[in-house]
Length: 440
Image (cartoon, rainbow, N blue to C red):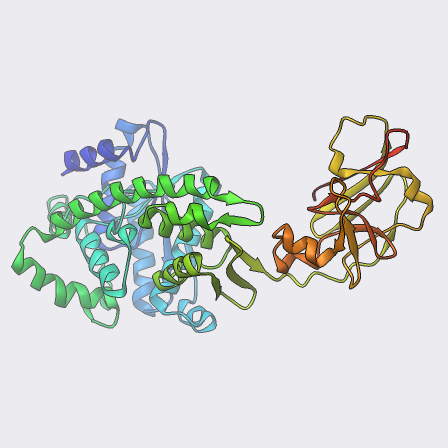
């Protein structure tokens, strides 16, 4: 069986010479076999092998038994063991999630912490049997192509060297190598969804196809290849469809439907809406991109499609901005950006941010918009209410109140996103002020 694991390792590039690896060790047959196998491969790959065990405090004395077993096992294999004890039942109640999910979150957080500390990969003992059960679980609760890939052989710094072996292969290995292991009593009951699938659904599927677990591996590989192809074009679309204030709806609607939906998954995650956005949310976003409208994603964030632009509107309780008088060599911070004003001599720079220096002595102030503000286009000498100019320039309504402007009374000299007005524009003989803003 060692050669089959080596084949998997080489096929997916799971190990390299000189790697450090942390074995996620529960003490069960799978993880015990994994530790034994990786110790056997230490010389071949020049590995540094560690182990990590989590006591979830769910099974009382049995959990303590598992912890002690892991200590004895790691001593036998001369492997350093890291142990963490967490009261998962209490934590799950506090977070209002299932103990199963809470336990998983705790484990992977611990593994990631150790991975960073040791500069090591994390090896989990998932098998082809686990993969098939995960596939059924994902299908039952609703999934996309990504979910059909079930458990990938490699994800970030997590590797799964046993992913092409069956549970029966593992038990045979343990028996042949006189490896003792512990059995989690909760695995025998149907209280957890995965146990129910293992005990009740998998036997039915294996009667239909005795090779179902290996068939599931093939489906997972095909799904991963398809997903990676779609993902590549979706990531490209994020940049290609971007425009001022958001994303161009016309360009979005020209995308292949699968690419559009995956792009929306990416945008939702990037905007911290959800770790795993629901399919129905993505379909609602597709609908408003086509027909206009909005979708409330949370109390703080709404997706909006208006004036041909799709965007996310997130409230951040920005404090009211007080007036700041215009001065030479000034600098101030507002809305995540630093603004500076200084006299310059070079007239070849960005004309939109050049203001006549004469306004230093005319009570000009930086502020946000007010009713009655007027803006004169510098090239058309047409004066209009600022709100109409915002409409003409298709500036989203949700950002208008936070745009910074420089004004004297109700005459706007310069406005963010619009640039300098006719009144603020310097002539060829006037001294210049340069307004610069950059992300803070």
